[in-house]
Length: 114
Length: 115
Image (cartoon, rainbow over all chains, first blue to last red; front, side, top):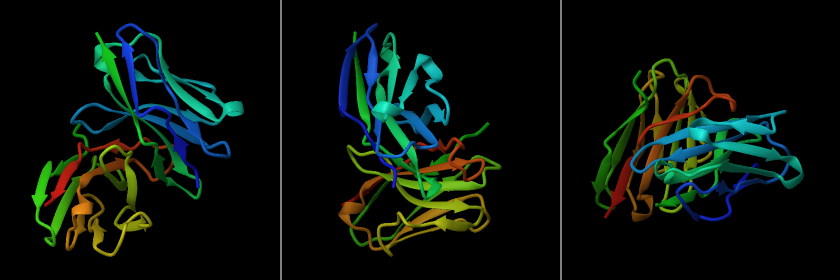
């Protein structure tokens, strides 16, 4: 079964600095990969979605993610952090046996320091 | 339009009691999912409905957990003989169809605390 690993449960960046949140997938190239964001006391919201063939995926709020097969990675980046980006971010992958079941990483909590 | 709603937002119960958690998906979405999110963890899949039927219930931890969706819209997650380990945020999501490419829209969750 597919899984994802998120390195760093907590990341702190200064306002205006680069945001880099790491995600690695487990094995074979998945057809889809997702990044979700969870703001305090809110439900998860889709940031962006990778589909087969894409390399650089652009999402909402200035976020993007680069799919690198050679590194089995799908890291999330944003050039300049805003205070409003403080949230928890989850990488997720559909189960290879049944795409409806999505497996989430443990999440990375992003703190933005003014 | 209205998003996914879940009620109650918070539920405190005593060990051994029965609880029901409700999910109202986005109108027209045929697929509905339940997840459980424990502290410090990502959401963990519980069950997936396509229409009225449970297409995949492999994530339900044991037979104390049961979910229904009798008319293909609202779903209820039922937990019998609750245990302290059941304390978590229970998330519901819906999507237009049950395909991996479809975005899942999440509700705000129900925080269940078992004392």
